[in-house]
Length: 128
Image 1: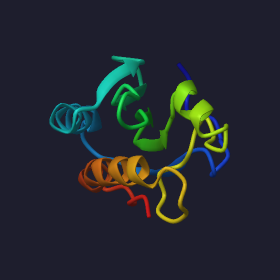
Image 2: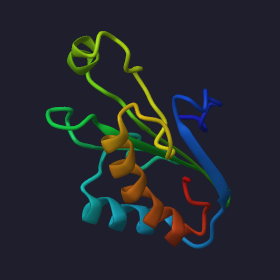
Image 3: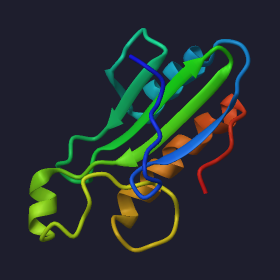
């Protein structure tokens, strides 16, 4: 799996920076305590984690990509097709977790509040 691609900031929140030591041990410990599970790329330099199935709250996803000592992180919520249908497709298929705006406020806040602690532990900028 390759490094993260550039995406529309309306779809995904992105942060990056230099990390030291073994970031995967920090990320794995965080994922266990925060309820995020690896859904793609286990054991590779680019891993995607997800919390939730979309039953009560839109699935919250975060992707970590390590290249040398540079870590890039993308975070987003991915509502289910059924949720989008009930909202007459006014909800996008992916949405950033930054603060501000009124669409999908609860899952975005939940995701941001869950992800920012691990970003702090890694020495990366917080998602505003």
